Length: 127
Image 1 (cartoon, one colour):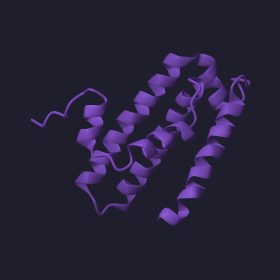
Image 2: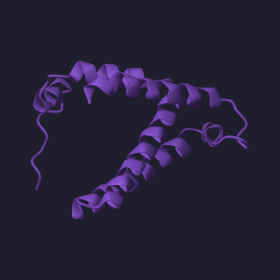
Image 3: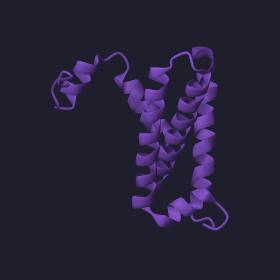
Image 4: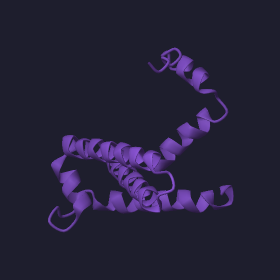
């Protein structure tokens, strides 16, 4: 899989370029331009909706792990979440490369070390 990763990162960069090109576009002709036109609250609400739909699809797949339909539904919801997150990022002046750089910075750190570095301490155990 790692052999295909650069191409996948290129896809994110191309999608980010298309999203950026829609800023200031005609909201009657472009869904993304409409999101930008409506502003931060609408964009973030959409991210929240997609996150919820992702959680629900993940629960469906967890309940039926052999279901190709449930697997594809989760992949579709994750794609929607990533896309709308990228719209939010563009609206706020960020690009996928910023997130990839942060993931690279964290690579090799344990989750507990990362929480401590951010001053949050260790995550609380599940109840």
